[in-house]
Length: 317
Ligand code: FO1
Image (cartoon, rainbow, N blue to C red):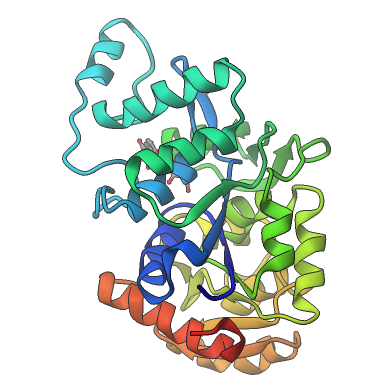
């Protein structure tokens, strides 16, 4: 088995890229560090949407159209909750609920989120190692024209409509990297930042004390690549472009690269953004230009192959 590859991942975009990557490198060589800023407690359940999206996708169980949740879901339990006057805006399917029951009960017993995630992945047959960035409580909140909103309240309930003024990451002063996170970065042959929202998906991972420093150190001698989450001035999925504008940033691939300038040394631009190459190179990043739009599994594999082949011989591929 070759050296380890570490990936930083948010939700749907990351999961799709990772399903391609897991066909290009041995899945057991992959360690995925997942975002937990989107996590929430809702109707009595502890929910970790990004970890579940990655796990379900890698297990081949995700709903292909939405990218989150499970295929062929039913919503009888949610209907029942709403009959009792409970909230029903977050679409938890019946099978998905089993994951949340399992996680909620284990967390209640004091089992760490990283161990719960390991057991979920083992039960689903997920071969890469999936680690939450932290076992500690970390919550993303969005400061908007309608006030400070919990992440899922902004993202799902209000459909990303309120204007974004800022992002507040609660818990980052005390959060510690989950067991294995820093070790994986320290021993990685390469790191890949998946095409995820840099502000609300990758941002919370980087905000866990120690992780950004470890990546900076890694980039001194090894490839740390990021795949642009912005293509042609727009986010392929989610509100990254609008959020960047709200925060006074240009919704451009080069502006996303700039957010990673202290620890990324290879940046993957989509072909339509080729004119931004000099701007990204000025950040002292090597630029790879390829098609990053993943319309199907073949496109995911081909993006993963393009990235891995450029990261070089040190990966033993
Ligand atoms: N996203 C939605 O847009 N609407 C939903 O009702 C919704 C429910 C949901 C349930 C479980 C789960 O794991 C994810 C779910 N998501 C839903 C996706 C989630 O809000 C986002 O993908 C992430 O938090 C952002 O990466």
